Image 1 (tube, rainbow, N blue to C red):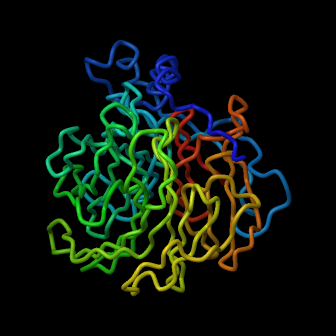
Image 2 (image 1 turned 135 degrees about the horizontal axis):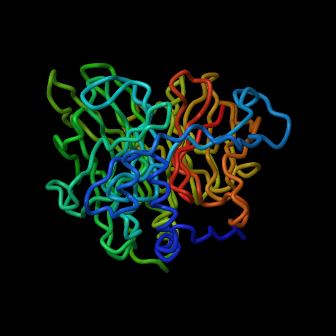
Length: 404
């Protein structure tokens, strides 16, 4: 039986941790508002945190591939903004300086509001390499064009124009019983909503990857709310991967040219601790194969000819399964072309070659309060700007970690 993911994101646990939350805000050096309370006000003058002095060994056995050069993990910064949103999900290293965004800084969004209801987070923070945090965007919860509300997911990218696209998989009470269809939000470089993409083939955008050709771009979006209802519903074979073709006009928000379902039938299920489990991280290989983290199938799926195919590949072929995988979630490409995959059930990062060989694993989170250690804490993942390490989100302490 697959281990049960700890309820580390339940409302009770978060409420009990509010004192630690406010302390983390102070560590992050966030500016305060009058409604944030005296503890948050004190944060305004607090310095940004330096990387943890108690950096731990990142690996637990001899490594090869990209992970062989990475040795320590540390905490860079809190991810909690002024409004006290929690539960960091997407992690994106900015590729372009535009508006409020500086190239090389890290954008992190939050899935939960300060009340700790999943699917209600509305903020994206920006963290510089020294750990200084500012708020990039705070999206209205009743944003027009997203009728289900706002709950920012792991789906986020920045286009060469500077526009940021982020997914929303919303709820009103933190459960899928009140989930909405969600949308993709298109933000201008100042963090303002320029447009939304909703309906069509999109339902609960959960993660995405993108390619950008300048005048056009392509998004590959996993969706996890097709047919999902309240907790207790059997597994639904309804998760999808949608290719969204965008046109990028000069000095204007991108528009949708077409949507094509290129993957379908992935298992998905409502979960009281994770909101929903289903296909999550995606990465596009050099040969045009799209790799998908099949969370419930405990495997990495491969969809060939992802950029050009006109039909669905179903659940694709299996690149690798089992082994060091344990609930794969976020995914990105290493500089050597290997896949880097976070596990949702054991706090580890796994490196997989394009041939499907699992060549290395590394501990990103060894939180002993979880069973197994570090389970349920990892979500977004991105290479550092110089491609010599990785950033990762840790939802157990609302922080951005780095492994080098």
